Amino acid sequence: MGIIKAFKLGFDYLKYDEDGNVQDTQRAVDDVNLDIEAGEFVAILGHNGSGKSTLAKHLNALLLPSEGTLWIDGTATDEEPELWKLRQKAGMVFQNPDNQIIGTVVEEDVGFGPENMGVPTEKIWKRVDESLQKVGMTAYRHHSPNKLSGGQKQRVAIAGIMAMRPKCIVLDEPTAMLDPNGRREVLKAVRELNQQENVTVILITHYMEEVIHADKVYVMDEGKIVMQGTPKEIFSQVDTLKKYRLDVPQVTLLAHELRKSGVDIPEGILTTEELVSALCR
Amino acid sequence: MSIELKNVTYTYSPGTSYEIHALKDINLMIPDGQFIGVIGHTGSGKSTLIQHLNALIQPTSGTILYNGEDIWAEKYNRKALRSEVGLVFQYPEHQLFESDVLSDVCFGPMNQGLTREEAEVEARKALQQVGFKEKNYGKSPFELSGGQKKRVAIAGVLAMNPKILILDEPTAGLDPKGRDDILDQIAELHKLRGITIILVSHSMEDIAKYVERLIVMNQGEAVFDDTPKAVFAHYQELEFMGLAAPQITYIMHALKEHGLPVDEEATTVEEARGSILSALKEMHSPLFHEEVTGGQENA
Image 1 (cartoon, helix red, strand yellow):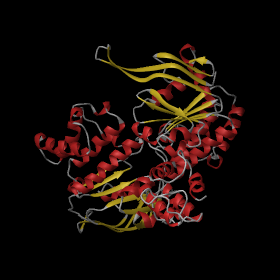
Image 2: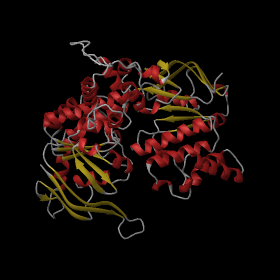
Image 3: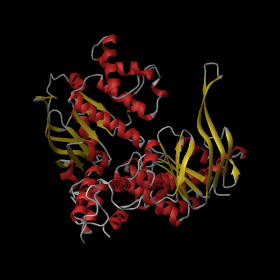
Image 4: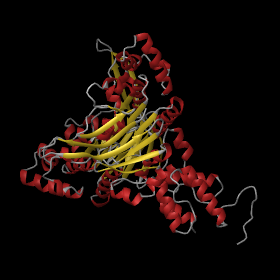
């Protein structure tokens, strides 16, 4: 079994009337099966309202399944009475950097997680040092978080998760509010954590260029997983992706258009280098 | 309906140790009917700049003229200015507050002095122009999806019939289809109503596709002000400012370096496709056979 496994996972949002009776249910996650191996970099794509974020909230037990089961590192989330233990294994980073920073000094913010877990003080500082270093924010440790750029704040948020030493980190559109530079910084930090620390990464995003290095991509629509495969396999299907309100990286789209016009190059080109070597043989 | 900025400077917290020069000596002329893009990294002064355009903040020094009149003159009617220069903030969904969509969009025009009936006429027109379906008019704004909320918020500003519409990252957090839909609608409005559009965006691809003029903000200064093609030609300087060019720009430069005679100035997929096809033809590349003439290569 992988680090995260879902079997026939289903989730309903309930709408109540004024007397507290269930008035309406809305299925947000429907019959989802997942098996994510430790150390993998997994991306989840899907349009607004496709169920990505609801699924993500199951991955660290912020939501519990209405149907089916989700296991984090072998423990079913609906059978663990102490959910915070699970949340230490799978940390979560959200979209808005301003909503997830609580400390008045960067290093205190990063230390909040381990302190809450009851880690002894000297070990907390060691973890803070390590985590800040991993995301390249050591130079800012004594700064106030509200003077940082968006990308820097997101890296502090990631360091705060890393200080809890999770096995898995779930990022729900971490770059949606950032400028191009901030986006690059955050992605670089996330990829390094995955490659150097072997942390499992689950990245939810609307930016297609951000997933080209993932090991595996899942595409969601109406709560279901409708496509899965390597980035190359997924992005070869330009027209299917458009049907799901998604897109492909510009370089992939350009290659696709050139193919349609009769140029003899392979489908599923993901990087500028690939396109250049296909065209300039 | 022009806006002119003359030597505009803005300083946050002047005289304290937190003093920040957010705008430094900005000179801009914004004539009627342009579609303008504004880019810049976080903290470059973009938001401060656009808040000056409808008098939400007063410049520390310099003047702002709307149709030749100083908007900070003593008797100037700034309330009227704000209904002519509409501003849609980033995360416009946070601006929604009424119990149903139609009432929310009516709020602006009613504030301008229209009756509910008159306001509804404007509101319906605006909602239709942003592509919002009539069957959802009675819904609570909080039941809507992200894309729908943004449309309602934009309609709320449009219903006041602004002459200039400023949008601060209207598509942040939307899926690709939602992003294209909203921007297509804005481009359509630009054509239909002939209003000036000022679009702040972090997406260079969107900028390249839609705008005719691009202003680049860096450290409080407008460092570039030209066509997108001319600005993106400076892609290395843009990177230095924490920005980038569209991915297509990089592809075209890389192809040229590897000997394919393409137009480096292409910034959209469509332009790049045309340019690559004609370069391949010119090179008599074995990769490309034109269907009509078929097999004309003589290597």
